[in-house]
Image 1 (tube, rainbow, N blue to C red):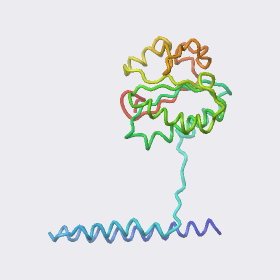
Image 2: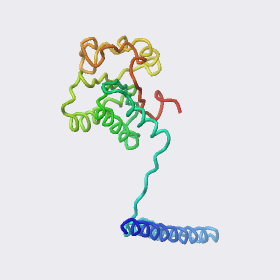
Image 3: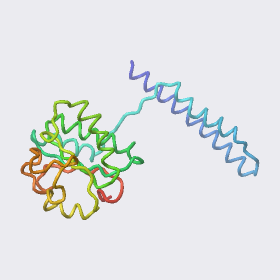
Image 4: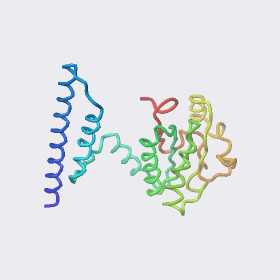
Length: 214
């Protein structure tokens, strides 16, 4: 019964909103075609009604898992406990509303599965956003996960694709220390990691250059 009510409310809200939008847009188009002035208060009133009407209905949106999301989830799930995952924070505050939740979800999922994290950034704005994930996810939700044992923050390194060309063969040459100047040779989570080829999974979170190719 609950599902039926929700679906009925969704249909009613959607229909009413579409009707209001159709009427409003038709009226605006008619006045524009006839060269008549359209006062801004009518536009504001139309926007108010179109936005407020759906709020009176119990509208829910059902998420659909895309193949790429399922593939990433399954990959993290399939990795053996203790696997090492490299996550690169290659985005800025303008992209954070879209990408930061994904970063948080990936970090949370990896830690929940017992994986170890290597965090880095190719963008100068990345470290501050990485710090948000570290504070809100790692330190708050997984306080027992120790820095340098289960995770490490390598910080930002300038050089764009030059950085990528180096870490493909020698990660420690580009990152001799972590963000707190601790030598990487003394960091347990990086034991056995000579290059990025030695990690079990790489997650590049970005929306521009440098970053994952589109």
